[in-house]
Length: 206
Image 1 (tube, rainbow, N blue to C red):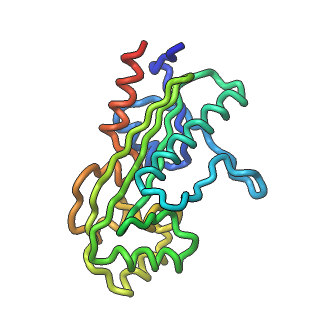
Image 2 (spheres, rainbow, N blue to C red; image 1 turned 180 degrees about the horizontal axis):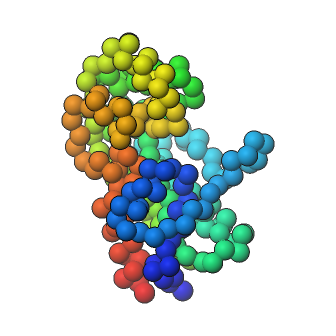
């Protein structure tokens, strides 16, 4: 059974940036949140596999999150609708830069990115019943050389928290960026072209 998109989709993500981006392209959505209370088992293990590429990792995460979201919808007996999820990571020299564990870790990440180009990969996954498809957007971002004071000030702002690569392009870190090749919305956290293509593909199956 292919579900109608007119009633909206479920967004399996806590990211306010993804909510804003979906609203930007006129997609109706309802939030489908994962567990977050202390002591609860996480829905998706975000550990990397040995030798796993950044692209394989980010797509695996997006697909795992959309599957977890679908199961959460079914367990809660919510009205059925397509589920969308996404995952973003940063890669430098083949090394995956996820979310920083603390401010010291964030400063280390920013120091590594300073004056260099890195990849930002965002995978989007869409599921409806037994249909599931995903796509990966890859963008290249170049940072200007950062001083220790600039890194410290940015980390102290707290903007690095809970962000892949320890920065958000839509915030204060925009002034660090010399060049962007690819999808701005993908770097923010939800590539709108690829998301639109997945939604159109699902519509065409009705």
